[in-house]
Image 1 (cartoon, one colour):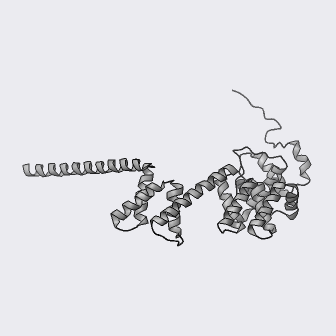
Image 2 (tube, one colour):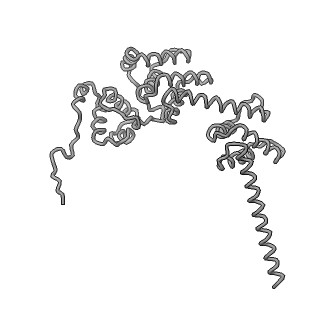
Image 3 (tube, rainbow, N blue to C red):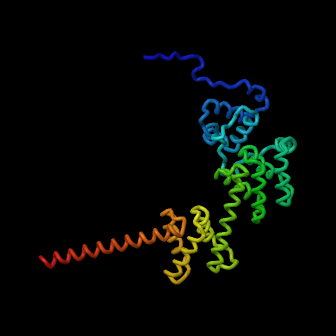
Length: 299
């Protein structure tokens, strides 16, 4: 049996010497988090914050300090977990924000672009929100600029809304400008299809209800249903009920989606098979009833 001799290194936490130059500038939260992360490298920021008795925002701020110092290096698959609670982002101090604007051209460009699009002078909280997205979330500045431009074009001129939208895109894996451009193209196609459906249904220029918007987004977005199939579902709904019913129409589209149909040909073949199966089932029921009746007469 192998015997393991306990050495003085057992149960100890080893820190790299590169930490030493940064210790004098590190706050207590930053020192505590550093020790905790090296003691348990697999932990999450949320767990570390809970164990250390600090808020998630303070843990994230401490994390950013050590990442900025080069002590913590993330792999592509190990990106920091973003806080969904938008009130939890770090309220960076004025010196940190001023240094970032002065020394980081990309961040300065991001701030200038945002101020121009919002049509106002940014506040300290605005700068903190942008720096959180840029520094902690590590969303590229061109992507954040793109989100700002898109939100403003849609009449959403609130930095809080822009913040939430950016975090949501990051969580959906949209973290490069190429991915953001693809997202915009897909969004434009969805909106185009929704516009065509509105005209087909004679909905005019009225605003969609939240339920209608959710339903249409699901059809064209989540389910990626081609417009031709949605149009066919509309025709079947009107033919079958004599009126427009989005509930009835949704039942048809949902059935096609669950069956994996994406073309008119697939729908036609699937509906034919469904009808044949229904007829066969009816024939089987008729045979069963006839046989039962015959047995009764024979008895």
